[in-house]
View 1 (cartoon, helix red, strand yellow):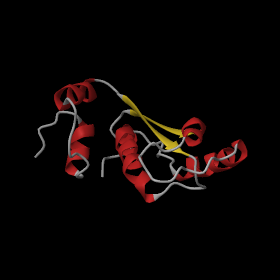
View 2 (cartoon, one colour):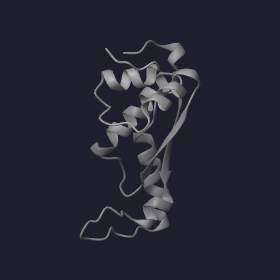
View 3 (cartoon, helix red, strand yellow):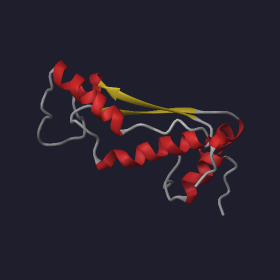
Length: 123
């Protein structure tokens, strides 16, 4: 059984999402007493998101289901800047047209259900 007071962290812990948390007591207290907001940014480098985006999308889903405010950003700016992850090859620079074409497709694949926690039970 989890020691968390907030529904959000309890759900994440029970589903194996949590490995490490910075200041878990402060986050738990905040999530237990008021709605919190979090965002995740996605690059629009392809026409759809990849499997690596599933975990953050699921966290946004559980945020919403437990009464909090998730925000998913489809970033033209981060798409243009590139990936600073130390790869040997630079990412191909996309034109504005390519980014704009990828944005709606990526956004569609990342939609978080708009049903609130009050309207359904946690699964």
